[in-house]
Image 1: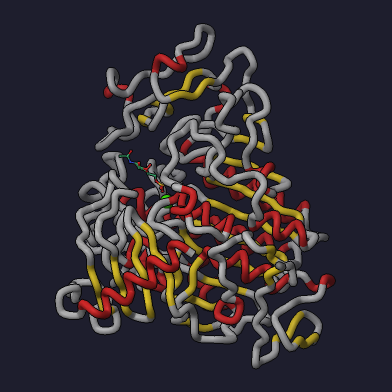
Image 2: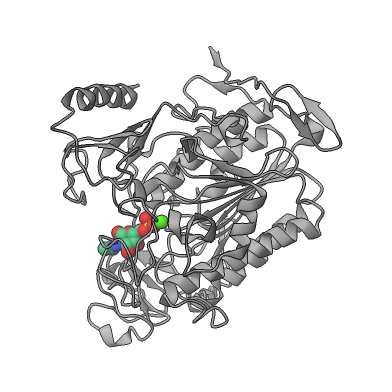
Length: 513
Ligand code: NG6
Ligand code: CA
């Protein structure tokens, strides 16, 4: 049976040259371009419109003022890989056991399932990704040949074009990948990637210092935790690399490189509908903003990296304008998880792993508790802005929405039918995303080494489960009422046991459905 999700709206949407439609579906000739600008570790409170006073973000603020700014929008999980997985597949990451991936992990997204880029292709779009990938590359059976065709990866899950930092900026390999090939690779200095130094010790390839034995090589940053693999550009990485010296990125230039690629992509595709997934590495560690951004905040490189990211957003918006595309482009700005301060380097931020709520007076998650890695609201409640000039009225929405639902929402917008078994967790929220409705989901799952359920302003956090044996911070089974306790301080699990049990039942049902 075919599954079609369609919401007919009570209002109407004006499109382009005065055309009016009774639903949000758009005719082929008017298909808007879609640009998703995805931040890395950018918290709800890291942008000016959401209360940040210590980091100037004029471009993101402008986007918010021209668009719809959501106060209760979520990534699917409080870490990168699971959130990106759900954004691109419309499936909860826990169903695939998705966790933060090591540098040499194979492609996590099966090549035979529907993805967001594949959906856009069905609707006649060109699709491109620029930025951080962190969803694995390779088939899992054969070791990836970094000196040949590096695949399967983004091209095999639906992107026509890709320019990537393959894993994260704190993991090897520290090179860019264009489509299937490493950029600027010298065949006389072959590139190897592995978990141990021994696995990459190949005669003839450049060897980099081993952070464990040569901490003095970490001249840019010392590691506070676990960034003791190959030391590249003076920074200890997760994992080991040898070779590829001519292909190494320069930390301070990554933002400029990605912006250049995004600008070129937009200009190249100006005459056809396109979907661009721009996945910035900002403001993930190691934060190394270009010298022109250094010192722009009193928060050190974390704040300065956010200023660099805001600059990049401004450049992308300007490129759309210069190509005459601003009006007919939906721009979405969001993030893959909440904020973190010290995430593994001595970069001047505070205590390891964001258990602190604020850094020098700046609270990256705003009033929401916690941040990256945490099941509290700050882990997944992230900035979320949609701008679609002439269609979405500017404003603020408190609707509860989730990135996992973009796939089904775009399917509805573009009138693409979803088959049974496709994007199973994606529920069209088109009316909420376009501001036609102020009501979001009744129920929504949150994930971070545990599952939680939101029901309106109620939040239930399940007890520790063997499914997440490692890494779960010590959070007991909890129940909060965010209406009068938005910062999750008052655990009601003992005083409202019936509510907790009812929500636990719904969570189980949703988990098993
Ligand atoms: C963690 C790393 C952290 C960061 C994170 C991924 C340690 C102790 N911590 O495992 O530094 O790399 O993975 O961040 O190694 S994410 O935003 O891509 O999920
Ligand atoms: Ca992240």
